[in-house]
Length: 478
Image (cartoon, rainbow, N blue to C red; front, side, top):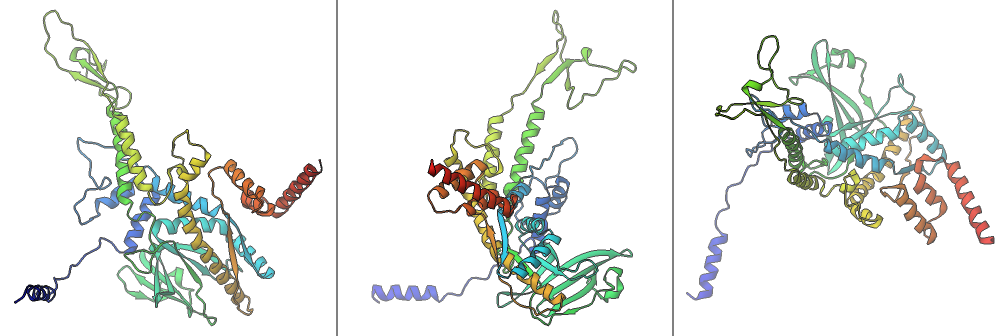
């Protein structure tokens, strides 16, 4: 057999071998479980994090800082930096404050939407929606019709841990909102399914048994509702796709919880080292402070008076003395460790300067803006999603209002206008916008919107434009 035939035979035998057995991977939590864990990180309560991680199994044998049990003689103060909530709140504020206006082509529809937005406090609702969707992974706006409460559609937002999505052909078909409550000492869960066909309710108890709606006082008056117009009275909000759960969103904390746990450990270790590095006073037995009435040794205080009994043999001609010792705290190493973990937590999400973290003080304005690029990238992704979600929400809200008022239900086209600049200071905004106006690529009207946004009314902006034009013409004449 020639060499070529031997090689061909070998390759054939290799490719014809049976495949290896499949590998089964068990995840530690479903989407709701992960959304609940991320919600705890956003809330930032140390007691809640401690209770959760004490019962949490990551299946790799790692002991997290919040899951470590401390007790007995060894005590350790656990601190939470609040960084998770700060990351989400900062992004939400950056995005929502740059929303200039929601505009519709129809003037009458614009008036109706402005009233809906005013009654439902849309600015606050949007800020809460962005915060919840970023922290839990996703969520959905729900439109509720209750004439006893409001003659307009009622807008609310629910996080991903409280709902389920039903998709057909990779498209959203229905949203099921869940709510748990207690009635006469019995726990119930109400599931509201919103679909193009209408709204249906399902009441069950903690064991999964289905009950009629009349079983609880809170659901006694609920009735299934048919939608003859065929639109979904809910709008999902997903900023990033989840690679493990198709059709669901990805939390900002996904893949970052380990680093967030580590930075909490770093700060707690720092505080513990500072406490251990306080001045220690070693006092001989004869000089120990005692109770003047009983003669018993006074117990030292961990913060104000720290002293230790010093046992030493009395030497001839030597007088017992009090020694004061202060250990050295490696603050430089602790600071570098904190910076390292902070960078890991913020990588791919935010720039440190966005959170007010002290960067190099010698950097000029241009260097500071360069360090804001990561924040601008994240902000751009969020705004791109909101530019699609907000017009859909406006359309659904106005169609619901048409349905409530027995008018012809029609489509409405809306646009959400956001500012184009997100500089860290007003001075930087003036510099950037001023260059754009001076080069002729931006009008004065657009410049006023960029600088003052919703802080000024349309009349105030118009007056400022007129004043600038008059000032410019007078300067040209002179």
